[in-house]
Image 1 (cartoon, one colour):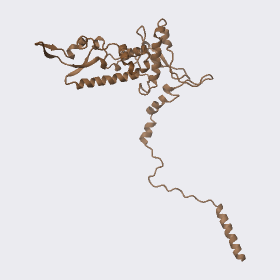
Image 2 (cartoon, rainbow, N blue to C red):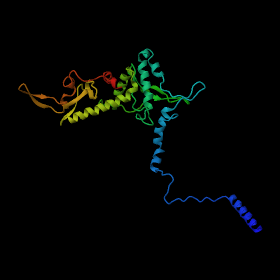
Image 3 (cartoon, rainbow, N blue to C red):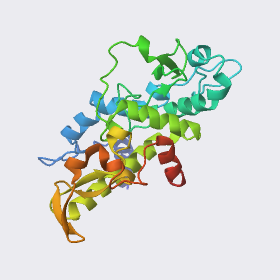
Image 4 (cartoon, rainbow, N blue to C red):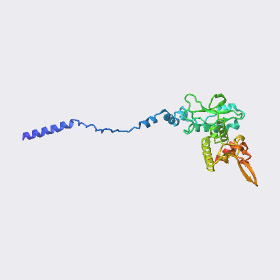
Length: 295
């Protein structure tokens, strides 16, 4: 009897001792070729490339064109969407009240343009933004200019003081590639307070232009782009100012007589009084008026 009691006591003691011994956890079995997270090395490299990071930074607060003014005891951190063009104001003290609204519209449009990732470049967000033409013909460009601790800020700069800034195009064809023509378009937009719609209008212009060319190509062999008001006479190279026209002269019989009907190549500047008599467009202000309902 005593032996049974001793044996049970011993068994209880052993079980209690075993509970105090920590159990060993078997290491996980990892199959050959297993990966916890698949990494696309090419995509990972591309995402970390300087170009991609710069594009992201362009919209990220605190960097590039989104850089904000530092917070002060009176104001929280904030981004600038407009700054007065003091240089332009000082250059035209007598005309300022007349041109003030135009300059403000042009400047506000500049901030929108700079922060649009579809325009300009990462390093030059204001690239291709039109200049402002002053009453005396001087041309002004917006450039980034900010003191330490200041947010992204644009200032008007007289282009006469910026030597070797870009290359001026001489041709008047494809006006969106012509710096002077785009400056005039911007001035017309600013008159209507629509400078911030510059990028949208240029997209419309290019789309209309491409559609116009497609119609010419579909109109038949030997047809070309005939300007209603010739470029030599100030006509604009926009879809509203060109129609399909034969390139070469042809002989046609009229009233029993053979006459020569001039083609585009021969008519040249005379298209203004030829196919374009009483039609066509030669003013950016008229062009903007025509497109206002789309902006």
